[in-house]
Image 1 (spheres, one colour):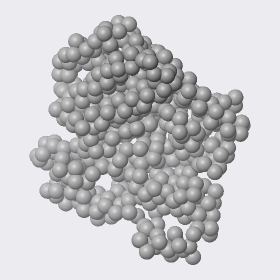
Image 2 (cartoon, helix red, strand yellow):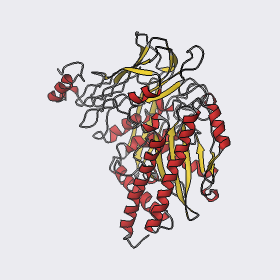
Image 3 (spheres, one colour):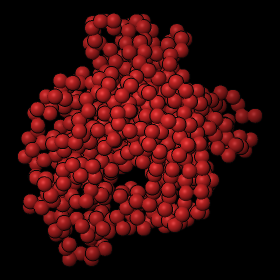
Image 4 (cartoon, one colour):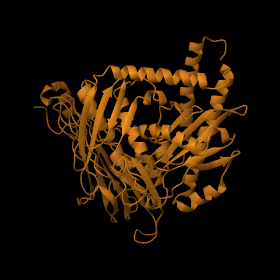
Length: 542
């Protein structure tokens, strides 16, 4: 390193790495074709050392992507060792078991070179609008029905894209321009990261990143272990019932805190099912570790060092460890419930830190139409727009309304969706009274009503939970309201599965509310009156 004091130099380099990965993520958002990336930030970006250990992640992104991508880079290196990689190469996969959990997410990994010597790797992930097959939803019976499966393979050689691979992808998806554009955007944002990391090494006189990597990972692991030691050692169990597909599912976890480590075991969780809500282990590990990080060591950077003390196990064959070729397209429906199960365990160890349960799983409005035949001959479209329910009430605060937790993505812009598809949002409003009662109120869900601009029929692929089983309150708080899906005329739709909205009809989505926290009789009277005045509460405080 330069003549700077080593500690100061390392801190400068660390701060620069954070700026680099955020620029990487922002680059992806600016040039991506998919609105889910541009508008909602459904992506991840990070930089890794030569061993494939994640050093830094972008603030912009989702934990399911980031923490799964942290493991995915290791899988890429096992298939293509860094010593055999060359400048101008990039590698790609959407393997659900080696990537981020379902076929719609593509991960691109790019080696970083300086003067011909490898410094590390850049990686990024984003959600593609379409991967062919049955489309994004719960209907498939195995992964091969869900779309195109790309194993870990080269995307570029000597800076040139593999046209055979791109032609194969274009031929198997409904929106080839958008999907190819997003793949090129992933490769481009990695190139930005690689250039910035190489420039950082030049500026600070670093021959490699080994010293910096050791500093970052050792400090992060030390900090995380210290945070775990603040918790009482013990064995804590919690289970939660969710809607499932055709029958309710039980998610059960036992969390053991011992010797500055946390071990999580999902023994007792329901078996995998025959439709696409199963979760690959790589996504289970990602969401379980995030559940821990949500309340333990929150000020410590999320990287390989801070993730190391958290161990996750799930029996093979359960819904949280569904092996190939299980259908997994809508793995988020179950997987994003995992943090609530972990928080239920941690509420016994650190009750003052833990929120109530929330809507948790994203409500992704997957709507499409335009193919010839029963849906009519009109402009083809497919949109996956995010509109969320309420979070659980937080210690000392009400829950957040219409806010995604744990995914962290932003709600989709109604105007952007309408600009890209022949759809119109007739209604978008909070659901008064949908947050669970408590000393601190759960966050509210929302109501959205959508129709076809031309009054034509269209398809909605429902992949929703918390319709039969509400988000529970905590420490005396009440449950949030359940969600629902129906036609504007009042007929109920199934919460999961591909269904037709008839010509002239609209579809109404009511997202769930979050649970309340604490005894409702202890709620501040002024806060309750303010909710009533703002139309957020259906009933005045008694």
